[in-house]
Image (cartoon, rainbow, N blue to C red; front, side):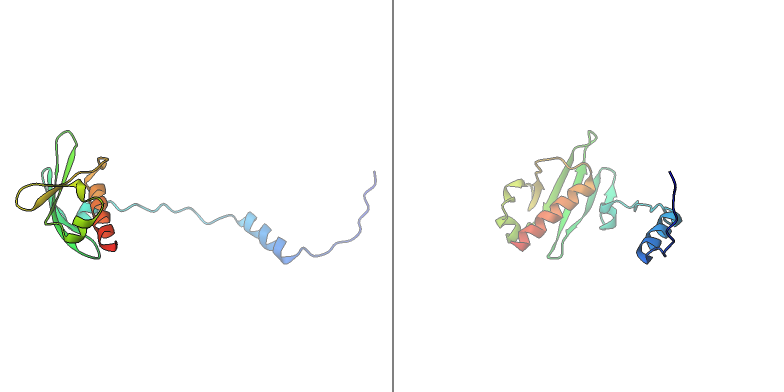
Amino acid sequence: MRVRNLGTRPVPASIRDLLSRVVRGHGPAENVQRRQIPYWQERGWKRDGRVYSGSYQTPYSAFQGWIEQSLSGHIDFYLYAPSDEIRRHNHWSCFQPRNDDWYAVHMGRQPKDVSSGIIIIERLITEAYEQ
């Protein structure tokens, strides 16, 4: 079999650009460190042993709270003096009265840590105000 050269023509710019990218490769990968500060600390909560105190903060309101983590890992969340907006929310039944206007917040699923629980309650408060 014979090969016959019919001439040459320039490669289109789009093909040249594509090939130059393939040959060059990507820049070096750079690892980005995840923030090491837990959410509860970032939000200003204080820890004393297994008890945390601070406030659940949303764009609409903030509520005083405390959290207790048992040795077994179970975490109890408390909120002080829920507003009328929270009382009208469909999750109001999750708030169980305790002493002196404190309410325990019952969760269907136990959060994996204190920070996750704070986020859940702050989301619930936000929903209550947005309804």
